[in-house]
Image 1 (cartoon, rainbow, N blue to C red):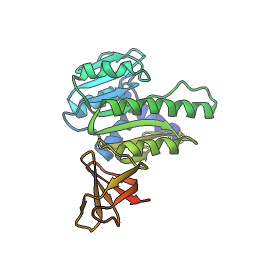
Image 2: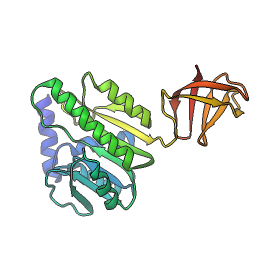
Image 3: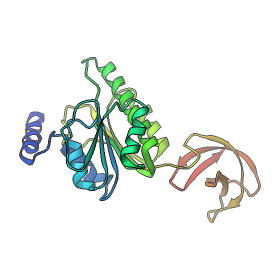
Length: 252
């Protein structure tokens, strides 16, 4: 079945002019999660051979930048940079090309496989962390992020770190992924721009009481709702959930 599926998407990519069968993975992910909208500025990290860039260009029609150390054949309307996604200097190159920040950062990059699963998994997580770091630097507030990772022991810690930076996070394997593959995609929406993150411990003063009766502390102009707190109390709190415009916390 897996071979039949591989042949199906491979043949389809050839027939429809896509450079890689992975184009259908992005197409299916976007149909489900609506990461990329018309007019979005999109950065594709590890973009060779360009199958995802072809899909992005059709979806967005906005500014599109592809980054890879490998050569990528030109695509109309796409800026291609030969650069290393693990280097901080690449961030400046992408910003210059965008003339601003991105709405979406995606990455289908994979490490060179050794056949030693623990090593390949660790390299995949390292590459995904590099993509995450670039996404945090390049995205506008409430921007979206998509990255491929190999499942394994380090996956839970990685997705937990993504949760700290984005409002909504899911793991998803699209139908175009091979059944036997350990790859999955982390889909993260709405980059958080507030001054707190899940797990933060802060000392605060309750400045107001909300409609629910819970206390509200303001941290750098950002509202943190503290269950059971009273007006004027000085408390130590732990943030347990962060949204785009506010957060929830418990009293320690």
